[in-house]
Length: 469
Image (cartoon, rainbow, N blue to C red; front, side):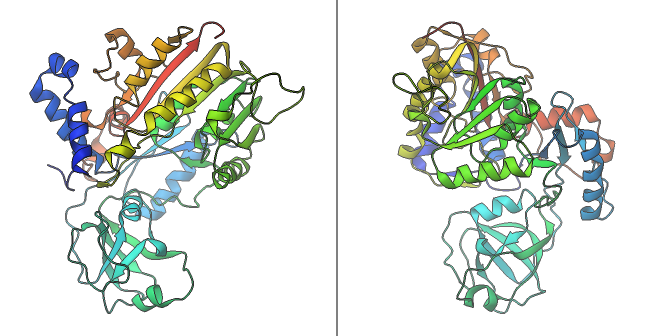
């Protein structure tokens, strides 16, 4: 039974997805009832947060063991004695996992209410406090210091400054208001900082904003797995084609022991600035950032010797990470997805343009890893089928570590090919939520299994380029 309602889609998008997850190949293999069950389960899981907070240790500066001890101290302070373990992932040694307690069903709702936007609500469910810009509405007489119940406006229908909201809202926990209603809505300038300090969220997870900032990087488990799958080596030249905000970029540099060259590109200047900031914070020096549209990253003709900025010469990178812009349907928690079908289906052509450039930039013998944080066939398995047909020089490779499931049927790939892919599918979990009373008795291997399954929706494919294009 789901604690929250299942994710809300536009009707045309829901119909599109239902057809995807009931495609002929899949129904022939598993049957209509099982395909439908998995689809409904997926919709329920997408509206809930993953079972673990995942952090990547900056092993360039400290060992995972050292940071684990520091993190345990921080969690004990925040949770006031509640015993919550920090687990080191056995196959991703730089990844630490913190179980999320919840959903907590015994919280008492307060008469004073704060309504926040859906994006703010999603952040609260993953351990954040409520920051002032996320507040849309507050009860008429709310004062600083009041205990308030926080609700997420999942449909985006609450008017800013409203004193009451009777529309669809989802309770996400209780907290203490740092400001009065009048201070929040009467200010002429734009206020920053915490508006509600969450004391009893529905899902209890640590607030890690500003905590051990040079040692830790908050990153979803599959996103951290991608860099290990690419497996960059010291001294190599690596390209991260769509790099912002730099989580994977800095991970690649760390795995290379900051030796070699990681080129990080993004077409938006502010996002490139964020990559630089993250590289500086983690004290990584081998990263070079460029503001460049990845579809224009290939040089036409000969480049001048010594020229370092894009466009780049063909076949000049040892490994390429192509974590493409996508429809983002695998992100969790997400109670309402507002995009139209036109927006959802607009990404496949862009992804193919980027992929074509990546193949040309890759050296023979080089590795290309393609990834998305979405659940559609058109952006995942269909792209793999297209790539293998379009580029005979490419061959699918096995992935290490392989902690997700195999690819989904429906794109005409063979079973052997599907086994080489990684699709992280939250619907494969059978239970939802974690209880603080049962957590101490849980076996570590069972918790690791759950972390591998109950994460965001994600997809990874790994190719080797056998010869020149």
